[in-house]
Image 1 (cartoon, rainbow, N blue to C red):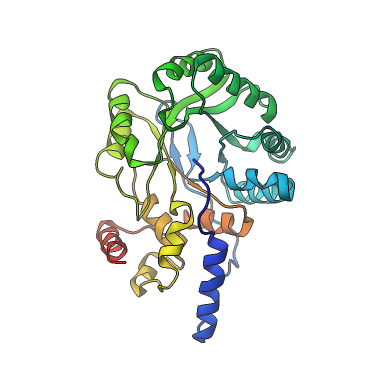
Image 2 (cartoon, helix red, strand yellow; image 1 turned 90 degrees about the vertical axis):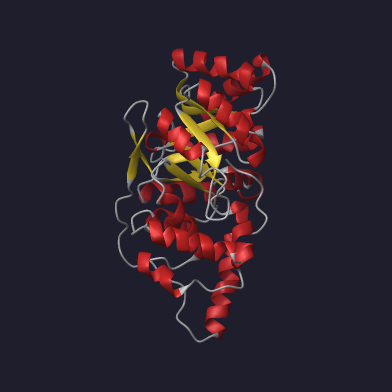
Length: 310
């Protein structure tokens, strides 16, 4: 799920690079070898395999009006080139959404993407109309996943999503949250329903779903999408004056972005992490992180203590 950025990783990395240079140290790591195959995890309801890194696309889609289609095209091609496929979207502007449809329909991308969408409007007819408009603008009669955004009008829209799946308009259905205030409602929903997917916020700094919701989703057989892995940029702002601890090298961690992603990916309950970026280099870095070693239980505890002390 995508929310407005507060601090970009581009700004963070620029300041980090400057600090490294002033210290006379080596620069940030460069990718010099071909990417490893991206790990995949199983969608429990069907057995389909899904790459563990995806794209939260709100930022590059929002920039279409100002920058055109090229940045989104580049980041999607970087995702696909590194073995990814899931693109999480949130329709909000018809012109930008049509731009997404153009890019996602390019010959080299159309059949290689797993495209999600959301319903975020109240009322059965209004919500269904939003989905039909998405089908038209995205040029996709059948979506891969339709989600109820932030549990909006949940009891009204959930039967609609079931009907859409039965009619063949979507392959999977699910719900999303991105704030702690919705956790109790999500837990109650998961105890009575079994969506194909549930999307929730989770990171090294936002661990409120770790104790109950992630295990519950796993036990219910739901695929789990993770949003806010970098707290929409606030994570980088929090750490901009700090160097990585030396012991992060034990699990091949070289950047703060990898620090959070590796912590998240080490949790077996999740299926795919939605990293939000409009920079293809950052997309490549995020994707490549998934192929490296992950922290074990002791290392994850050490990571939590380190972040909590910042």
